[in-house]
Length: 439
Image (cartoon, rainbow, N blue to C red; front, side):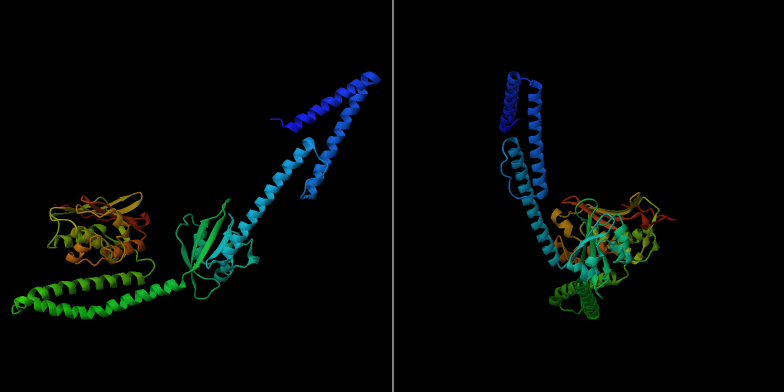
């Protein structure tokens, strides 16, 4: 769409051409008049182009005087664009300054890296925790943070989970590091947090739980011994028999909690990676099934299905504890007319231990919290059955130490399914297999 000033300029040019044509006809030399007029028009346009180029190069803040018509509109349009650009630049500058002030004040270290892991920007905390200075911009970050754990993390494809290393510049400090995408062109931000206090508090908590549990173990053993003697004493007055039975039950429950707490403490205080002994999965599950069948209150059917002869590598005592806790839970929450199935299978994703039951099921909102310590989906039922609330926490901890995950599926009134997924590197070819299927 042609603007009004453009129509005016075109009309003026046509009028001047008409005047030149009339002058040429009256005074002669029509071509001379037309060429002269076009030359003058071209000189005027070149003059305005020169003024525009000079105005742009000098970056003057005001519009030049004596500019009208189409050129006036061009100047006005460029002036508006430059004004908007300057305003956007100011806003961006304010945002960048605010970002730098806020990130500089963060207690967590922040380092921006390019696609080649070279340092682009850092805050003050990065100097304190990583030992990186402003003069180090342009250097690769692994030339400064040389911890092998961090170097492997930097080169790995999976960078979702953070890693822990020792601080290269703060003696005795432990850092949690994580890489997150930042901006475009493959840039990343390295975030570091000092977790020394958290680790110290966790150690204090573990030590307290372990020491308290250990100290409670001996007196509880004595109490249980006396209560067992009183329970079996035929001369015990009838009025005391039920209270003594209740005390014995609660003391036994407390002792079970202490044993589970000691188990958790041993797992947490153990080596980062468990042993890689060969574990006969079929034999282990058969033993757990036999223990479940010996319980006085159990479902009518406990079936073991082994679809693979492969074994696992790991700590047998830990795996026994994890699997037996899963089976114990299934037996506890399945009625006598129900059914529990224990399975072992292998595919391209790894090995899978499955414990399925036809019990009452678990509410959907309770499933994410089942592996928390002392969490119970059915508190009343657990008080009656004597559950400690630590079995699934122990199972999850053991599985994490073996690089495995726990998947929980459940539907109210239909039952539950707990599946332990082991990675392929935890599998070992089996020499034998136990095939036990019993109604």
